[in-house]
Length: 469
Image (tube, rainbow, N blue to C red; front, top):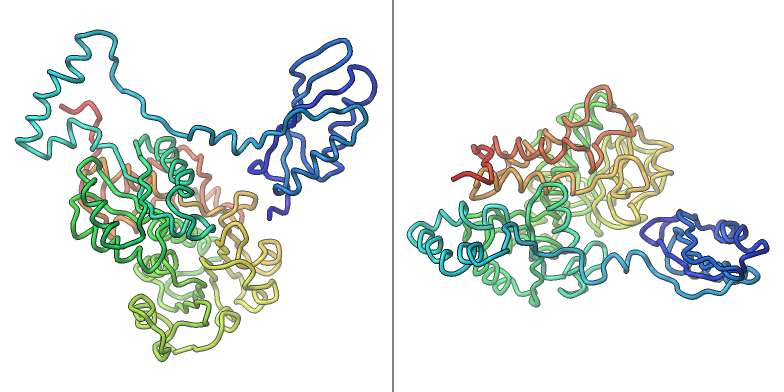
């Protein structure tokens, strides 16, 4: 639950009040007395006896929104007509659409865009399949693929319920990188079926973005698709998160004047995100890392290790620490949480090394209260938008795919991920860098371009204009 009113729980209450008297002036007071925040108050219809008013306000959650409505209704003379949830209104009919890039105003244009003219273009591609990147949407299109098994923090809610999230992802691709993305929600959680389905639709896309597929299934899906396809396959929950964490940590360590090679890093979470973050941190030079899951530290003598946990045990925790997360956090320079809410307290953070860095990224409720963590740590980051240093994957994936598509890359390499993280970190200038600004805003105009350029260079490609003949 949000601790303060949030626009994500914003409502508009359409009501009527007497034209005279105190009712209008009491509306704002009623919302505020219920703990809400008025963001707009619009008179939509005025008469001699009645005024119709839309009151827009932010609440903490749905129960709080109802409490605000009740408080408004209690104002003398107020008649409630309609209550609209603005988030649901935004989603009515979906958030994306297909728009033609070419005019279709007359027979000439129709005959070029479609039959008979289009047949010549089809035959050119039949003779050389690579021309599909030049002559179709393939050059700028990404499939956002999910099985609905690990959607946000909501769990296994299925492909239909995943669709609003995938639509949002597609909208972000367009907004931040000019990429046309389309949600592909699969009604199967069978690895073979997922892989085969994506393989079959791949000719229509320039890249595949795997999204919200649960671990360990996601590892196998990604591995097999990378072997089968000649276009990039990128699991954002893994690699997008890893890029953002490494970029943020690079700058956080600059703030506290420490080096990644020398710090002790404790991680909570050994799933998809945790595994990818770990691998990229190790590639960036981290040497002393302990990873904990819900059973405690991952170490070589545990008898429950699957393939993924075995890799973690073989590449971390050199001293074989076998205790719990709280013990692992003690004397650590860095904590990175990609796990579950409320598993640490401020007292636990107090046991960390001086000038500690805390990334509590469980969303919406972090592993430790950011306010409590800030009492003891030098730098704190979360996945939330209501605290400084929000680590959000939208900082990475639009630029990554822009670079991959521009370079016409056939895959994704570790060098590309490292280059993306370095470029993202560098967007924050030395003059701007500080405990409350280690990553740029998602709306920073340089983010996607900087990441794209770095990925394109790492891929050995160059920017290709969309009018290239």
